[in-house]
Length: 61
Image (tube, rainbow, N blue to C red; front, top):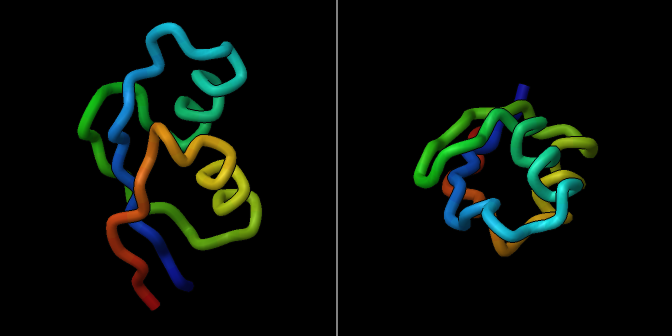
């Protein structure tokens, strides 16, 4: 299964609750943490909804 490595680059302080919940849903809650997640449409949608807070570091096949 293809995976992506996502890194949190922005703080959730003073952001809407929905954006904070999206970060927690991705398994990120502190700055500069990285997670390796399955490359599914739902994960891509979550990442695309908060591009100012997360960054895709690597895509593995």
